[in-house]
Image (cartoon, rainbow, N blue to C red; front, side):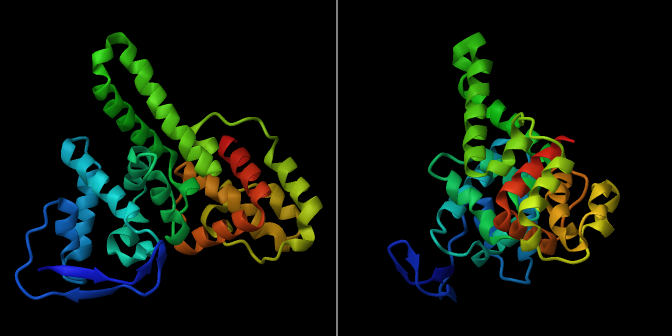
Length: 280
């Protein structure tokens, strides 16, 4: 009974588009809050039920931890399925508070599946507000401290080491999180980074009027306006991403796609400019 998702797989390769069939008979009552929310038919309370579950996941009690664990398990179960197969992940792209809790709580064998969600969904880990990461680290420290309380006065030190190891693993997979989660090294000013980038790549940059100037133009480097017009949008992208990480604005899906394209095409510049902008 209930709703089943069918698709063809060969090893780790998904061969067909998933199809949903509603079987006959009376479905069993789903055992978890996430499963109960996901059992709602589309356009019949599904989004509202999922949003309520996400809100519950932001608590500090055991039910909240269970929801986070279920979301992590769902991500780990994809194994090649597009995350958008499930409406839960489509909505989750707009919930950085839940995403960061998943990233901090995922085990080593689940972490890659959670971090890979940004590859196919309209969000980027580097634009998640710093405050969400701080709250997730605080909760992770509390969980570790509870598990290690038998160590007495040494418990806080070991709990912090546990959180630090998780942060190091996240930064290793997503280097752009370095300036957000750990102390960044001094890499020079944004002016120096931008000029060095144009010296080596001005002929490879293609663009137009910057999409970011209407939203956060007053917070972007005015110095860029003196540089070639066709480079402005590319130069602005990592600086706008850093402003999002600082919690100063929320990029739209199109903005996220453009930031990802700039990071992919000019990784050294994006990494350095993002770090310098976040620090400044």
